[in-house]
Length: 269
Image (cartoon, rainbow, N blue to C red; front, top):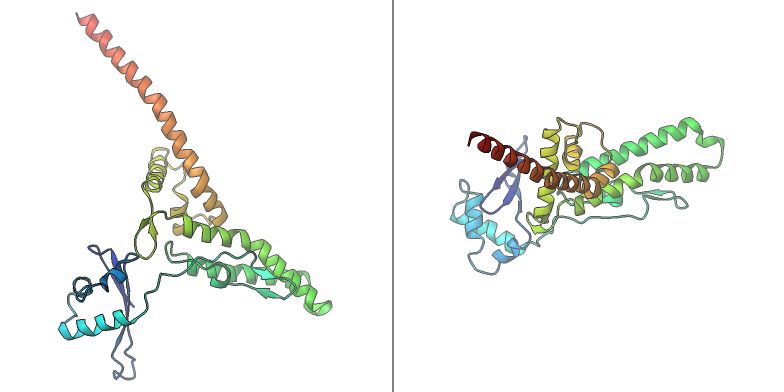
């Protein structure tokens, strides 16, 4: 898999060569090209709309014949929207003995890069619940349906809140300006992230880094539900409190500073 981006168009290109080790007969390449939402559709409005972006993204590999071939495929293919966010009312049905794992229970588009991680974490939680229940109760000792019902309930109780929070963070953690397939953060959110990073540095780590960064760094086993509370509530309160404190303290410090200068000048006179 090869991946590269283009700053001019804010685009990403992913390429996967289909050549096998046994034979080079199938020497084609599978491409996925991601543009800001709406741009791919706009390229179709004119006859040469694809030419400039394709030339910019593939400057070394596209000749006239290849360019026309790729453009023809892009015009024929259906434009995807990058995926959907999925919220479920529950991660399982106790009576039916059904459990939802991965995207079936908490699908999310790739804005945070947590979709695969979250799915694997859900599998790990399910495995843990299965092991714990197997230790507590032997399935052959009693009613199998009751055992399955308890397993579904145990998994849902252990994972539902965090799984829902992960989707909330994906959908709402990155805000309101169009970017690659989905929406980018508004100015207020960027100020929140910048403010938290500044406070984190100034307080020598007493104020934590922004929750989304901690989540993606995966250094302190931060739960999605905790990250959601920080991202949508606590961080806003912290930044507004710091701003209010600065608005009170700095004018007083400035007044004291100016007063001391006046006294010094008066004494010299």
